[in-house]
Image 1 (spheres, rainbow over the protein chains, first blue to last red):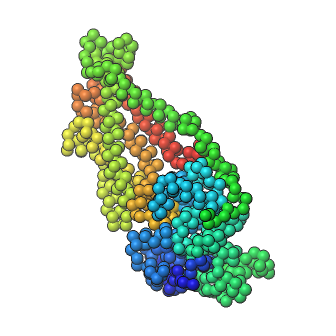
Image 2 (cartoon, rainbow over the protein chains, first blue to last red; image 1 turned 90 degrees about the vertical axis):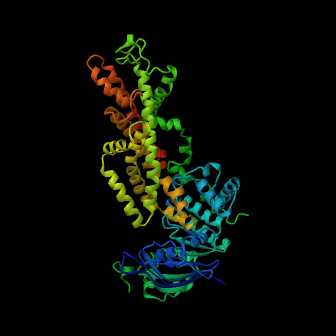
Image 3 (cartoon, rainbow over the protein chains, first blue to last red; image 1 turned 30 degrees about the vertical axis):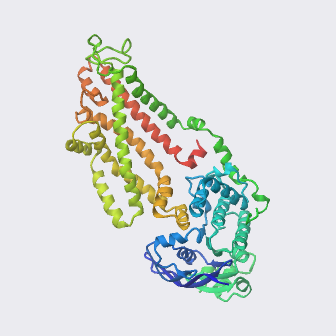
Length: 272
Length: 306
């Protein structure tokens, strides 16, 4: 398996903070593989995702390397990064409703992306949009194309975003908490879609989540982050069967129904 | 060659959206039925229509009527040959109000347009630029904002002279910082939205982000502010003309009519009442319109209605 994304010793510090948001983070993602990054809030998992996309704010100091098919993205100019974004790498965000421009209809913003990235004509783009929306399970007609994001539910918007990602077929997708803002039944459907996205598109995916259930269903490799550091890198089966780090054990222990004997005062954050 | 199959039957219909006040209902609403719910917009547009109609139609119906002198009709009251009376020279007040409206609206629209054309790009650039561009730019705007609009206008008139175009410039200069500020504040907020980041992550360029995503989503308050500034312009134009710094006779202007009418208030009050009401109507029209637009321009509020 060729290595699509290789992150080596990635270290990020925000100007406003004394702490490292990411501390010597290293991992690899191959095409068609899903790497999970788990950790609590503030563990630096979103920072790593932003660094991979080159979307960190200008106030952040970044060292280390993010090799995307051999090209180091760190230090790349904004317009070089722009060339990669879209067709080469893309993102799925937590709240799909706010990730879509509220001012334009679903149809127009979807079609615009297709026209710009794939140079389709207006009519071709509209047909493609319909096709992809149907592919993610939205019974799309020309009526739906004229809807605004706020007229769709969160789950439908997340489908739209996933459909956009499918249509662009990027090599790498960074999904930051793609299911966290959705209710449980919709989560299951979106997970199913992401799994098909993984199987069919052959894209590499970095899945950032705090939900170990999501990891279990989608990922093959997992890294566990805490306070900016990777405390454990393991395969999914290994992680659940034989967690190496004390923190991972506690994280697993925090899953409801897994360890009913956990004393209530034993917090996950308390682990060292 | 569908890559992904539809997942389950739960996804077959956009049921959740329909429950949330959904697409079907919002599309069912026509522009007219929306207008009936938005009173400000309705009354504002009707008044504006009236004002524009007077401004356009009356001078066409009686060419030269605004300056034609009829000695016999001097200081005539409403009714008869002169619908809302005549001035001390027997000039028809309605015809003069109509031409006054033309001047007023011309100056008002021109000045606000100037403010928009300069102010909006400045605000957008300031909002999206690093501090060393944003800071100095906005400090210059602050200096302009420190002067009351009227004072600033008088200064400009003192430099470039009187007349319609000068008025436009005089009033418009004061609007540049106002509109730039509104635009900047709004654009900074919009810039934080995740759809902007999402667009960036899909490869949108700086200018594309600004023009396609940030600007449209920030324009609402700017348009509302601009509409209200049109009303302010009408008052400023009348004020400047009143003190002799604006439109010069024989061109009729609402402010000028008020000014000369003062001398005849005791004997022929219509000479001040007519232009006074005319100003009131126009200002009210734009103020209400601004209020109503505020609701209309927000797509979320538009659907929910009131």
